[in-house]
Image 1 (tube, one colour):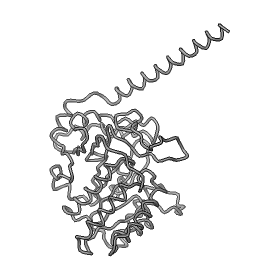
Image 2 (cartoon, one colour; image 1 turned 90 degrees about the vertical axis):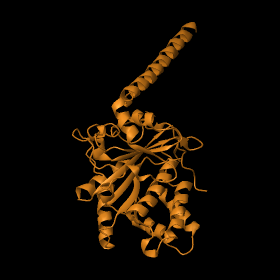
Image 3 (cartoon, one colour; image 1 turned 120 degrees about the vertical axis):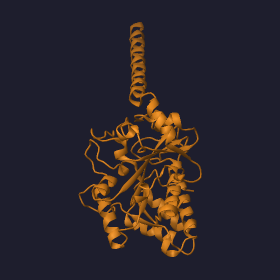
Image 4 (cartoon, helix red, strand yellow; image 1 turned 180 degrees about the vertical axis):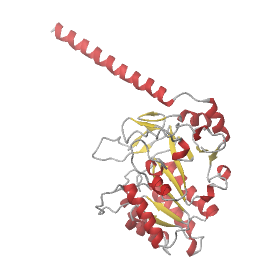
Length: 351
C-alpha cells in the first residue's frame, strides 16, 4: 500500500511539474512573440491616433482617404464596442463621403428583409428581431441585442434623410443553397460586382463590417483569397480598418462544438493573449487608455508600419488560424487603420 501511495505521489508531482512547465512556456513564449514596447513605434503612434468618444474624429483622414470607393471594418465577432464603431463609421461616412450603401456579411435574402425594415414607413421591430435571429445561422456571435439596437438607430437616422439618400444594405455573402465550389470571399466579390452593376451604382461609395480576415487587402502565406484583396485586385480602391481588443469580454453563445461559460462570455481571446497573440500590440496598449476606443493610422509619413509586419502577424492557439503575412508585405499593405478596444463588454442576447 505504501508503495502504491509513493508511486501516486511521484506521479502527481510529475504531472504538476509538467503543468507548471507548460504554463511557464506559454507565458514566456507569449512575451517573446508579443514583444516589449518599441519606443520608435510608440512615438509614431502617439502622434497618429484619436480617441473615439461618441463620434468619429476626422483628424486622421486626408484627401486621399476619401478617394476610396470601399471602406471596410474587420472585426473579431462578439465584442459590443464593434457595433458602436460600425454605427459611427457608417454615420460619419454618410455625412462626409456620401456613403449610403452598406455592404454586409449576409446573403441577399436577409439584406432584402433588413432593407424592408430600414425603409419602412413604420418601425417594425418584430421584423428586425427576426432578421437578427436569422443572422445567428451564419454568425452566432453577432446576433445580439446590440446588433438590433444598431439597426434601430440606422432606421431613426434614415428618418432625417430624403428617400433617395437613405441608407440601404447590399448582402454579398453566399446564399445557404449556393452549391458553387468557390470560396465565400470569391463569391462575395462576384456578388458585390453583380449587385452594383444591376443597381447601376458603380460610381457610388460603400462601407461595411466584416469578419477580420475578410478585410485584409493581401493574401497571407496560407494563400487564401479575401474579400478586400479581391476587390483591390479588381481595381477598386479600398481602405481597411481592423479592430483589436485588450481586457475585453467576447460573447460566445452556447453551441455543440465546444463548452462555453454559463454567462456566455469569455475574456481569453484578446490581442495580448492568452489564446490569441498580435505581434506589436503592446505599442498600441502603451499609447491608449483603459475603457476607451482609440483609432490609429498606420500609413502616415515615416510610419514604421510601412515596412514592419507588426499588428498583422497573429498567432492563434485555439480558434481560427495563424495570420502570417507575405514576406514582402507590411502591415499597411493589409489594413490602414486599427481600432483598439479596451475593456469592451461582450455582446448580449437579444431580449
